Length: 86
Image 1 (spheres, rainbow, N blue to C red):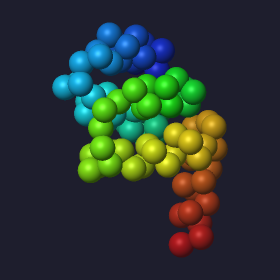
Image 2 (cartoon, rainbow, N blue to C red):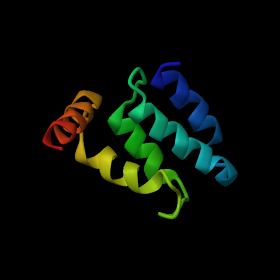
Image 3 (cartoon, rainbow, N blue to C red):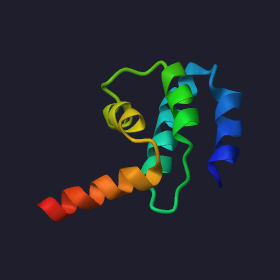
């Protein structure tokens, strides 16, 4: 499922706070999945609407990476560089 399709589903449930942890996980998996798709501007908009605190295991990763990077390629290039440096 492409991110546009996911976004349609997300927008249907964004007002339901009980769904926020699942939406957050969806954003996380879209970012981290090698074959996943994500729109950084749209993901940021969704992320800012979620009522979740930093105790959620996906929150801090997204709070950093959705704003640090502008594209999935940029994100993956940074991860590759980190692995090379180790």
